[in-house]
Length: 390
Length: 87
Image 1 (cartoon, chains in turn brown, blue):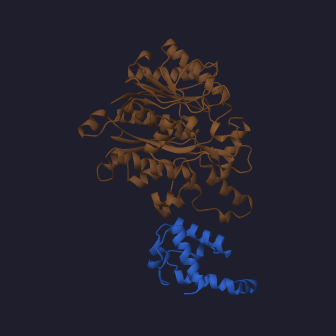
Image 2 (tube, chains in turn brown, cyan; image 1 turned 60 degrees about the vertical axis):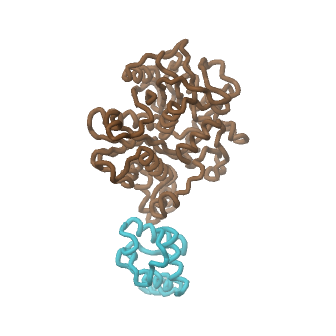
């Protein structure tokens, strides 16, 4: 748990997928869990009890990010601090408990926290309650692109002057029985239950679906002039953001990745950059057969023979859905700071249908240059972020 | 203190994080937690743990820990069921 431990795991390139006791008896019964998360120790009894996993992760990551930025409740004007977090779905684990009581004819046994524990907006609300921030506060939802959209929206809010600081990112836990059953039903999950640590394998020829993950990623965004003025340690610049919709299908991406291409090109244009300026790409790369091919085609359309190195984190941490884009954005920032690209886990044989320069096996030195991070959600909702080294 | 009282104190510790050293039979729930939702849920958890039904109105900010223990004790003795049966 935490940014440094996550980075170390990404650099090691080993999947954290393992059998999940919460999912026993389901067609897919493994997941990627947040390791070593002691909610009671971190949050205390009351807050830990009140929150579902996604809320716990949101608060914990927000605290870590705020502390890392050298900010905190006594160091900012609270009404000028916003919280914008991406969440893909309502928290299904808490909803399941409430539904169970209703179906058993025991509506008075529904927890009074059933709603505040599960509503997607509560990730942002609980972080704001915990930090005492009083500026704009809301959740952005675009399924698996939520975290990236939240960071993009946060950037726009800084540019518009709506606030001076944004606690931006995403939080989610896909580890509920309903979520696992639903994704399995549409064939999106890997069924490699006998070898869960090999199940998430972006761009690999033998990939067969994604692995449910969970977590939160939070960045602290400020206008560069404000960060410099207060003597902050600037880790990276958020240079560009682009978003688009496929208007093609409820779950499948456009077969040529047209929406993805437009999102990446918009992000580059916003950053004032050309494809040749990009040093690496952090791909969405879920490890599903279709999405990885389409993303590769989209990146090929944008970058052509430039072929910047491409990495992806889901082989290690699975798919944290609404949190994924934010966790990946944080990882891109660390990649730029440290000049190192984590390898794609479990990539033994690149799918011949994928023509990308993928980082495999061991970490690769990164060129000191801007990077693109892509995120795509159900409904054909696409987001791309461009970060530049500090 | 009897076991009913100890059960209440233990659940206060486990679910609301209340230090048992701060609790006496005269302590009110309102002194321990000012969140009405927390108190509602505490009733639910106590009900799940003991099998004894605590109606929503039973637990308020003014209810003392001693009074909650007394409710558990009466249920165990069957008094409440008898009274409900004759009502």
